[in-house]
Length: 347
Image (tube, rainbow, N blue to C red; front, side, top):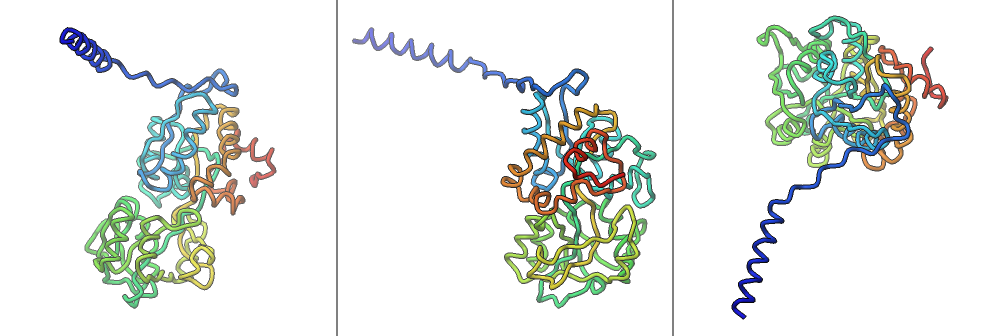
């Protein structure tokens, strides 16, 4: 009996050693796709937004579908709207999500934004996702109703100073609020920056008078939605004449938030500024038939994506935005597909 026990223990130890030394099975590469062709990219990196943000959620939804359908590795690269454009310029990736305001500004090399290089002439659009109109939100008990009343108040932007200082300098002076890009002493507001969740919580806690909020398609950002659920809030009104003076601008043009999307806070369509139309951009040198397939795969899977992610529902409810002209040319492969679908709006 004792000898049998020793033998069993020995077998157990050997088994543990064998299991402990076993190497994990390698992750299989995507299966070859029947649509793949010679000359197509062997892999794809897709620039997106910060983890948890709208652009990142868009990329996280579609990239596994592209990977399976195209038979190539497709990687999501977290980043930001402006950062993605600069990385695209450096040729570290050829596809990314960003906003049309930044894309048009970089494509034209306008002075609205301090780009580091010349015109980004190899930028092309494949499809648009949704608009990013923004607003200021405050607690109802603050008594604030207009953006012009924010002078000398504490406000916050959910993003970096490099982007939002430009936005503020283009919009707040129209409300009688001085906002200098170069000289912080020449600003009529006290400014804080943070994540959406952080600035929303500071408004909720009474540490801020107002914060910037943004629509992500049909709904506000999650942190702003939570603030709206937890507290009685008000959305501050812009001065109509000041907003309309930005008509045709590459950055911060006028925008409308449809009243049904903010029915608790507005009684009519809300006039504001547009942070841009979020879109999927590609490099002009990508093969036409490759971009055609990217667009085709996305559009054919759009109903499934919309079931999983509310941000994609905007394309279902307002399909006209998909090919809306945003000041940057569409890629020939995308144009071919949208013409076949009868959705093309360009020349």
